[in-house]
Image (cartoon, rainbow, N blue to C red; front, side, top):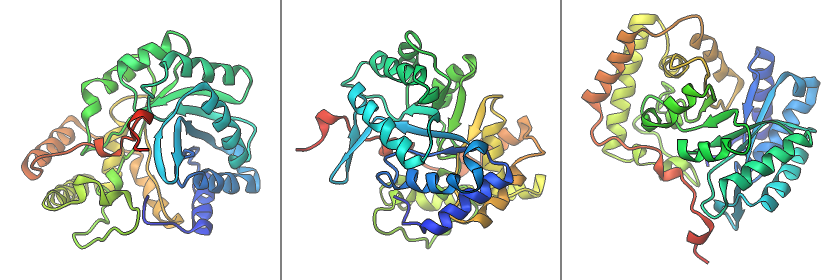
Amino acid sequence: MWGGSDEAESIKTIQHAVDLGINLIDTAPVYGFGHSEEIVGKALADGGRRDKAVLATKVGLEWVDGDVYRNSTPERIRREIEDSLRRLRTDRVDLYQVHWPDPLVRIEDAAETLLDLQCEGKILALGVSNFSPEQMDAWRRVAPLHSTQPPYNIFEREIENDVLPYALQHRLLVLSYGAICRGLLSGRMRFNRKFDGDDLRRKDPKFQQPRFAHYLKAADRLGQHAWENHGKSLLALAIRWILDRGETMTALWGARNAGQLDAVEQAFDWKLSSGDYAEVDRILRETIENPVGPEFMAPPARDLVAV
């Protein structure tokens, strides 16, 4: 869903990341319909890297003929963990996350199934992704919850109204996905960029005119602020902006090649001030009309899938 990738280059990138000391790798079965997990498994199997990485994957999305929908039945979870362990070439998943809440399955049933897997030693920690505070409360009534993975970045901030304060209050690890907003905050996105094939950004309203121009203008001004005030890149600002939200914050973003990992070091050894946060807000107010969130990415429930 990102315009294709080169497997050999992907493996090199993962290995370089681990060698640099990046120790969290997040993936999911639905990414590439199993292929992403296979690539991660190959990369970590070489050179003893598996034990140097915290390996996070997900469960609860099923695909049929390219159509993806939610399925968190205990039976589905049981099948998926075995498939993931095989593809990842490992005997345990360090963090196992339900990818999306399934309206046709009691959250407590999914939580109890993951708790059973933890007791069996197949997973070490339990997490959720795209869950509301109410859904996380239901989970925590029957099983421990260690993490939540919501969409969060400078341009997509809906979780500040509910999920983020809940997670910080309960000291959940927050794995913020879309940290650079599908490339908009990378500093490399240009007005003439084209998206082909099954690239997710073809369906993202942010990448449609006239919104695309507005977001690019905002990104340009954010990058200017980062460089003029801190000597840092836009990407470093985007990552730092998330990390400084709280002690349990993590920013998830991807790299296509090893060279793109060089920007990682810029995200550390500095902090954002309240003035920086205020300036980010001011830039957004002045540049972006009709902002939109990441709602387009939500997969349908099984009862909404056309037969």
